Amino acid sequence: MITVSAVLFDRDGTLVADVPYNGDPDRVRLLPGAAAAVGLARSHGLATGVVSNQSGIGRGLLTAEQVRRVNERADALLGGLDTWVFCPHAPDAGCDCRKPRPGLILAAAARLGVRPAECLVIGDIAADVLAAHAAGARGVLVPNAVTAAQEVERFADLSAPDLLTAVRGALEDTAVPAGRRSR
Image 1 (tube, helix red, strand yellow):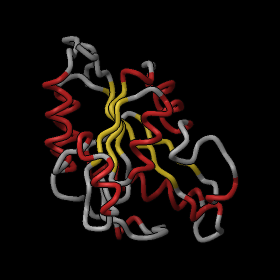
Image 2 (cartoon, rainbow, N blue to C red):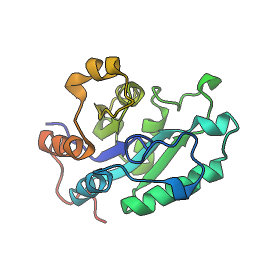
Image 3 (cartoon, helix red, strand yellow):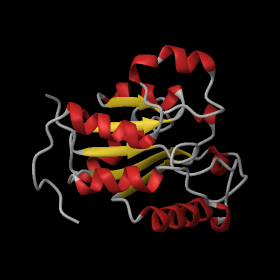
Image 4 (spheres, rainbow, N blue to C red):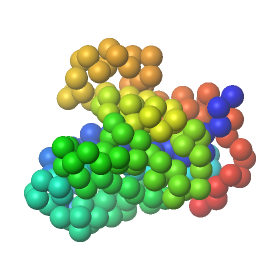
């Protein structure tokens, strides 16, 4: 069995409604099942976190402080996650953190004190699943209305219809040490 110690979620289009380059905490809306999925992971002693590309910072469309405030609002609505990590770079910056590269997953795992192989990464596009694989983690695609059809097809065997099903599937497929985390 695979041991999952942490669940890392993408932010936009996965946990919250995707508002492009959102710098306004008042515009944060949880997607259906997001709070329940985070709560389920936490109730099983798993660490939780968010790994998110935020290219609007690198493009000059919003500030890191605005992203932090949006993240704080989402965090409050979700009941508090253990870590939030974001890539502030523009897509052409060549950084190691921008998904599909592994940097965000590696940073989140380090912050949580778990091995990347113990992380489940859940997101709505191929870059999320590819970043998970690049880091040695497990990736699950939860497609939405804007997920490209070819990505849905490509990751059909690594997908779930919704966040709650993705977390439940991980819990059923893994050995989660009792009492690993307490909240």
